[in-house]
Image (cartoon, rainbow, N blue to C red; front, side, top):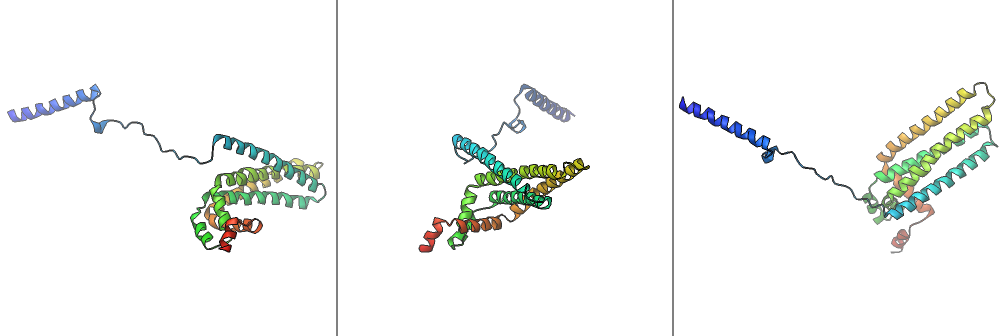
Length: 229
């Protein structure tokens, strides 16, 4: 009996000591809450603050000039053609935006390693594709933010202008405007969704085709040196 009493007393003493330690703030190491950990931050190589500011201003100016030019040309053409061809031009503007969205997504998803192997075998377009990937942030900004978004805005504005020009006196003008606007928005959004999926899935093929097209109009100096060697 004395042994049992001693053991019970010892256990109670241990519990009492643990209770005191817990309330005194000196918890064992395994019970302490983990301290604040710094999350790893990926360093950006997009240049200095001045370069980013200049790039943002340049993109703004380019966007203004492009949108103004497209709107001016489209409005000039719309005055001379039928509504049928006017809608075809609007669809063409949408598809141009979708195409550039595909390129913008592909350039951010692609890896340049396969193109190095292709460039060593003197494939046309490989060197241009490598340049696009190395400037992926600017290329994606031009393709997605400048051309893609401008085409989306211009197509909507052009569609509204077409409806006003050809159906302004129609009894169901409001309904026609809503239907055409909805169709343009649906085609634009659906095209962008397709561009994202297709651009990520076949990024290397897309960039190689774009690089080949660039090589046709603007051959790379590196490619010429390799051919001479």
